[in-house]
Length: 356
Image (tube, rainbow, N blue to C red):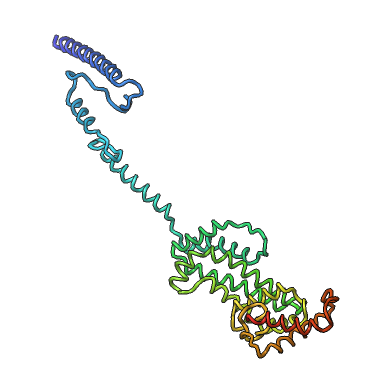
């Protein structure tokens, strides 16, 4: 009998629990419907999958009160994180740490450190190739290089404290090029020597017009600041030491010989070489003052009146040499014979040499 009564009590208890479950389920659905009416679709509140519905007040237990307190504390801060979240506190801290890590990684990415290995393997090869093309280009040639990219490489290397190494590499690179140029000039025959020297000088000076601006940051923040020099002056000095000084004593006699024979070389070639030599080393004027004075002003002392007859004799001699070589003076029908040599010679001499 006792067992039957216990079974009846157990059955009634089970049926009571089932009834309470049905009632709780119905109350939960009613709460969901009420939540949906208060928060229609498209509202800014969180979806049901992320936020538990509010249960009726008479059915809230201890867990319902705790959940309500937790939701009241889930207030967003200014930085976008949720504060007062007990269950997600560790996750919130982890998110902040992750955000800080991302910011640090971004900073490192934006300010990427260039090691000496990176400089030698990545940056200097680009500069080396560009310098090669600039040193060997002919006037008017198109150079397929990006000046912006080379300029950026130099800027980054200067910012990463590689100026000293880059300057050393640049000087070594150009020195090797000039030594090759000097050897090629030594192997040139005399009749081509002047022309080839003119090409080498013009090509190098033209290359400096591109190389110096590309390395302007290195020049400003290393050469001028620490070495108290200028990049252009250093590069001109390289040509003087490795090319011009080695060939000046072979070149000058050929220039004097070409001067005595009119139009043996073009006037533009003679002018370029003489002006270039004067730029490299002004002291070389003393080797041939008369030659340099024809292309550079104020080389000789000013003319004096007592020497006018000597100047006139020099001009007459030049005119006779030109006539002997087949140069005519044009129509002379309205001039008396010999008058031009006497009158025009002295007047031209005075006008041309009066401003030296």
